[in-house]
Image (cartoon, rainbow, N blue to C red; front, side, top):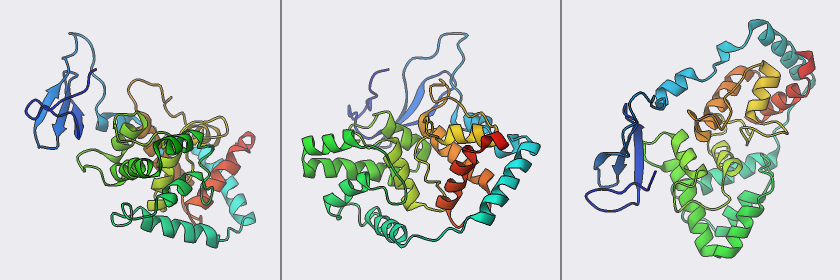
Length: 276
């Protein structure tokens, strides 16, 4: 599908998808306020993609976990909590407080560029893995241009249009649908931004699926819950990332000092899946 363009302004910047219509076309909105249907209607007999709310309703839920499996996980959790005494790392607390200010509406465009680059490369609080693509792009673009692209990426993720759900703003950045998106600032770093800004809402598990243990693997090994494959045609990775976070956070439940503590339990339990 080609790039959408406002039929009045003839401008393809700042265009947001609103929803998929029943005939398969996309309802688009330009910054001027105009809305229009983009694309061609689906061929007769072809089923349209599921809409946002339909997909969310079909996503696996905590109550889908087998009760006996949940009971075994809770016994494992009780054992973990009885033998683990998490201490709040002052470095993590200070680091996240610092970046909550950096990523605030007032701080994002006034912070030093080096703070943005440092964020991508530090492992304090959450390990984003190798960021060679981001670092190479930063060096090639130069500090000023790279910092602006990174700022615009974070701004869109956190403060983008209310008409576009966070899940879909995340997907736009992952899929390269935004020309200003910083190269290499992808899933792990975008998720890490959300963890820092909303530490009570996001588990610092930065990948949806990975051999080492992403959210999908943890859901399967710990809870026996099958989450959709990222290549499934009716889902987007942005939605899978956020919805799986909510499911795992609910399943982990109460009793943890913070989401970092809850994540540590989930990784620990994953490695003991034979007991479940």
